[in-house]
Image (tube, rainbow, N blue to C red):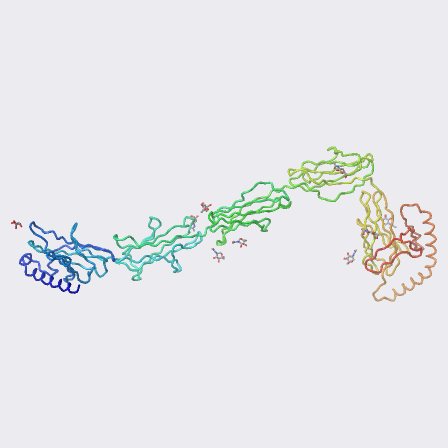
Length: 634
Ligand SMILES: *[C@@H]1O[C@H](CO)[C@@H](O)[C@H](O)[C@H]1NC(C)=O
Ligand SMILES: *[C@@H]1O[C@H](CO)[C@@H](O)[C@H](O)[C@H]1NC(C)=O
Ligand SMILES: *[C@@H]1O[C@H](CO)[C@@H](O)[C@H](O)[C@H]1NC(C)=O
Ligand SMILES: *[C@@H]1O[C@H](CO)[C@@H](O)[C@H](O)[C@H]1NC(C)=O
Ligand SMILES: *[C@@H]1O[C@H](CO)[C@@H](O)[C@H](O)[C@H]1NC(C)=O
Ligand SMILES: *[C@@H]1O[C@H](CO)[C@@H](O)[C@H](O)[C@H]1NC(C)=O
Ligand SMILES: *[C@@H]1O[C@H](CO)[C@@H](O)[C@H](O)[C@H]1NC(C)=O
Ligand SMILES: *[C@@H]1O[C@H](CO)[C@@H](O)[C@H](O)[C@H]1NC(C)=O
Ligand SMILES: *[C@@H]1O[C@H](CO)[C@@H](O)[C@H](O)[C@H]1NC(C)=O
């Protein structure tokens, strides 16, 4: 090649010589090697770096019988390429730096020099000299404009982080910035932000920017809406039509607030105690919203299912409504953890029906005398309020529905009052009352046992608690109250007479001011409108006084003790005698009575009852010393 190159140079030298010596060239006033002599117009050719450029040069002879002899290309008056028609074979073409291996003369359809892999340094004005056999030499000037493309744009977020592919996620309603940055490019490139085909903003080639080689263009999106989700933003940079613009794109990811929340199964009313499933759905949030259920300010447990694709969350509430939930508001709330004020909610005022229920669960005993009207009150809890009541009597005779005339119905109060007058023994038995509301008929009726009214049974199993020098607590088991309201009475007797008389609605008494270390007899019984129960009596000794004693107290105690010793023998004798007489006299009496002697001798005579323990006559009572002592009847 080197040798061939030498040969070619020789040829050129010859050609140049031949041309300069050509009289026709002189005639045409064309001086070779002088750009001044080249005719007027300059053909402009643009090519992109790395691309191909065709520098046109018309080599057709201007007249017939003429033919092309030689073409020489000059850059700055230095030959860089030649084509000699007279040399056969490949050596007809000669190339020099900087076109080595990159340029080739072509002749069809028109002629010119094709340059491959155009370089920035190829930017120049070239001269093409065409020699003919006959016609005078021609010169053309071709300016090659080499376009350097800008770099591919790079997109940054507002914090300078390079983004590839997806940007965000940003918050719906927020603002965000995208910065497109491009380096290089000759001529200066134009930058644009596009969404689809529409141009959002442009930085023109003429717009000045301070930072030398790098140009950048910022896109600002304010108040991002859901339409911005998955929006594709493209930044382009272009400085020629010869090449497509350089591009980079990003897709926007957004957090979206929940749009809707609804409770799907709104069937009402619900029923107390029946397991209920409610479904709440929220859509629109991205990622799917967080659903919670609330009732009366408290969160309920639920099962959530998030459907990522469908930007939807479903939450299943499995819950058993209670009576008190009626009228409360069930709230389903959808919120998005990424937003502060995104919470939306839907409310369901609860309409909970329930089975009428008895307000008092236990069976009530009602004592009623023949021909005496008794009011039997049936009260139920129900929602909605009951509209009908049904009363029935069930006894050994049969099963009878009570005539509606005999009872009242107060719907709002959920109450019915039956005025019941037993006319014969067949009218006693079990009364039942059932209410009915929209939720149905009461399943377990309110029950009342109608019994002939009697005197109450006596209290039993009396126990003394908290015995002190001055007080004690007494508790007994109440017996059957005779079907009527009962009062329980405790009388405390000392030798001097009645010390305390206390009545109470329950068989429970707090007895005070009893005096220290005193033998006391306590009598308890129950009283109702029919009369008194049998008496139950027993003795108790109060505890000695523990506090430091005063002289007066000591004196009193000594006196009392002396009196006690003196009186003891007589008292015991009298008591025993009287007791014997009275017991005999009243052997068949149902109850035990208390004989209150005259105030003067202040003595209590307690009748005896046959003790199952067979205690002796003298002092059969057990005196409680411990905190809790069972007292045996004497
Ligand atoms: C053209 O060439 C032909 C043959 O090559 C010749 O006969 C003729 O004279 C030429 N004409 C001119 C004008 O030179
Ligand atoms: C943001 O966009 C929404 C929907 O287009 C509009 O309702 C709201 O007023 C806008 N807010 C601001 C601050 O522009
Ligand atoms: C959903 O909300 C509840 C209550 O506010 C919270 O405890 C829970 O962490 C939230 N879950 C998610 C995934 O945000
Ligand atoms: C997201 O929710 C919106 C509003 O309900 C709906 O229009 C949209 O189609 C949903 N997108 C998907 C992917 O389901
Ligand atoms: C939510 O509120 C807190 C405190 O007010 C604030 O720091 C935070 O930026 C807010 N977040 C959004 C997404 O608005
Ligand atoms: C009546 O009472 C008896 C005994 O308590 C009971 O077995 C029967 O089922 C009752 N009848 C009705 C109709 O309630
Ligand atoms: C009442 O006392 C008797 C005899 O001491 C005893 O058998 C019975 O269990 C007691 N009843 C109660 C309810 O304590
Ligand atoms: C005994 O006294 C204690 C303390 O005052 C009291 O809590 C308790 O109810 C009393 N016992 C009875 C049976 O009254
Ligand atoms: C004790 O009081 C009741 C009524 O509270 C009365 O019936 C009874 O006669 C009184 N006992 C004595 C002995 O006064």
